[in-house]
Image 1: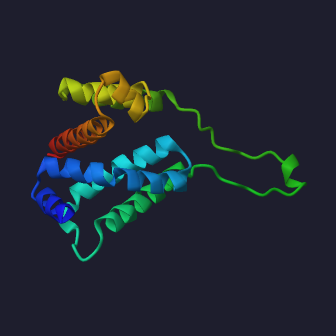
Image 2: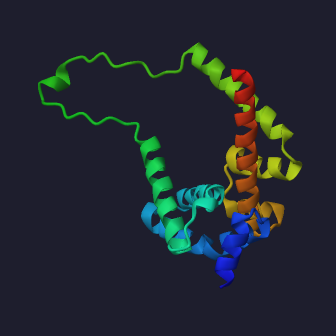
Length: 188
């Protein structure tokens, strides 16, 4: 009954209910993804993304289904999306005769223009990060620039692991909103 109550509260935007649901289901979703990915960092990233998507779409959750089943379905989709993004290599079977021929392969080295665009995008991102509250800036810095694990961030900040996860979730959501607002302003 406590789960249903917290789901209903979360659907109304109650942050405490979100935290309860995250704490309650984190280990189940994480364990499932760890078995699938066999990589702790990937499993953590997928879980964070799963809960972010679930909380964004919690109004669409139907009580006729188990909440954990709904979360696992989201996690599977996030995992599939991650795999698709990583699929950048192309496999080509060559016969013995073909191995001696010269192929015109495109040069994938970034051009000066590509590097400039990357630097400008990084500069914009850093600008947005500086607009966040200091505690959000810190967890973004530790996770994405220093590449610390969630546990290492928790140890560094002396905060519970779930607080770190929630801070990262909220920081990413705030950044996405800021970037979305900027794009809307540019289109006008």
